[in-house]
Image (cartoon, rainbow over all chains, first blue to last red; front, side, top):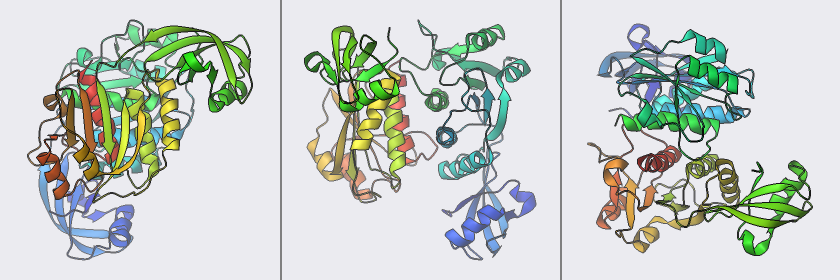
Length: 237
Length: 237
């Protein structure tokens, strides 16, 4: 099986790699016509193909064969986080959550938010690199910065989607293992370094969001995201 | 309770903050004589004290009172990892493992190691910052780069210390939850990006180290360290 893995959306209909992936295949890996590659479509499919023509702008592949197809993940994680001041912390969070496996990552502004704008393109590239590295099958959607209230108001808890938020309190609320129902979809909110404001916390409770604890230690925002994502994976092992 | 937390080894005998902590107290936080502070001794103790004299080189404190003292953690994690080429990845790993709580982090050279030397001072500073941020009580010891074989040969499994290593195999071995006995001490080895060599893996098996899996996704070295540390904490919740 080829060790060269690429991301290509809709490989069955396009038949080629994007310019970025072509550049990597041609200039970095120095692949040639006839070389075998593997392709992730980001929506559950892993394929094998053979390079037909290749240059640094476009790579056409032929003999596309499916190796694995997962129609729907057993559970889904949709994370929303108030971005940290240092963009680097969000980049690390996206990389690590994608390595574990996650289905979307969105950002919100709130009272104690430290960052009011975000460039998503770099995060999307990090997510693609982590997908290829981890061999996960689902590429997360990276969603733009949106006011917290707008997000909260737009969602309804349902039997197939649990709405949750990381909550620091004394005594602590239950941890994720106690608060979630397995094999479900989880929409998780993680607040900024200064936490949700008391109005925001009240709104989350009013709208029936379930609070959860991440243990005794005070975690940084990006660590809380990584811990929540990893905990849900462990609970499904 | 004061929101200003400092790290001071042996506060009962010294009565002062280090130069680095004094600089932070004096120049960044602009604390004054009479201000209350909290002190972590890194070996299970949390104290409150009052600043007596303060300048950017030395801060003396008085009225030291113990707030919390944990004699011995319920479990201990001792991690050994082959450092990554990018030092930044090791810095993140140290920060995240310290936030979750860890008791020592050591480094080893092995066949597929990408880095043959390491400066530990910066990692020690990161560990102290994460200790203060997380309010954990134990500062991990940061141990120097040592050849893998030397480390393996120096250790014996015992009923109070389990020796483990992250192992990728098909079919996978059991995950940490299956392989560990709770409330113990865990010495965990995580290999380099190219994994342990087959000779190294054989040696680990010969010496009765227990293999464990971290799930289906292929994790980067630093992610495997974070995942192992976090998983052990979750198992003890």
